[in-house]
Length: 366
Image (cartoon, rainbow, N blue to C red; front, side, top):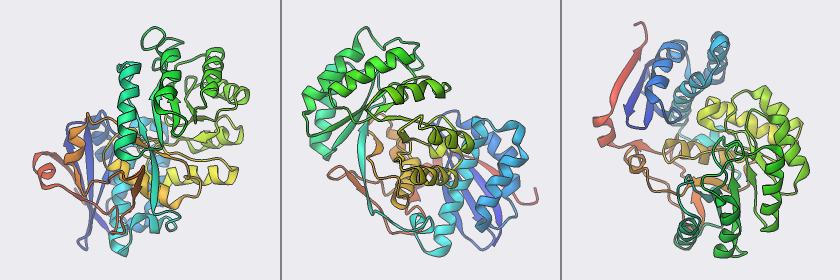
């Protein structure tokens, strides 16, 4: 069995990938969202040539070879492109074996994943956010939610004056003590301010405090984690496995949050989850968008012992395009998402998506 064709299907907001073999198998994957045209160009120029003509069962060898060959260019776009091909190959292998991907990853430790309603908005007012999350908890049974605080890469700024100090107690008042609440700062704070905000989160019994300091400042994040009792989470922006090892060994975070799309696929995210398991800390893969990436996260979560916390599930419904990519769509019932036992990722691309997407192709021998 050899890989003979790799396609990217470009539509607004995303690039879906299809990988074909000489015996008629096909697998689907997806790159990380945003700047999909750039990612697709990198995929066809730098990733596809390494996979074409190769045995898809050599997946991890090929992924490593890709990063080794392009060691001078291991930036975000290369990892995003690798994720597209790598996740498509996982789907293909699952279909070849007649098994869901989570079985190939070691088997299902859990067959349903508890998820939290994740807000992506800082523009929403505290009162609107409290009402929205209350409605989502009532409708879908979420037992955990996550809100945004501070300003993205904000240098101690806030999305609006006093918003952080207002929304933290308001959410607890609105949701009561029966719902866990987490807060994501997106690298907003200096060490001193992060500790101050962290203590406010502790006062209102929040579940975790995500990315309190700029993600590049690992030492400052570690100082915050050392000073607080609330678990500090981070890692979504990182793609170096060695950096994740340093992060975990130093206990710079209490919850590690690799992103399948940003780190280069499931194989590498799996290694982070295994490092977390060995260190005795939870792994909650970052997944802020609705798309095939949510499906990848579900399979990883099913198989990895360290992924026992609530997993991220975008609460917003402002991505209608995401519902037009594949089917069947996973559903949140009583705060959990059940896993399918269908082969591969267990989904197929919708005909409408295939018709509207712009197709780019890399072929063996061309």
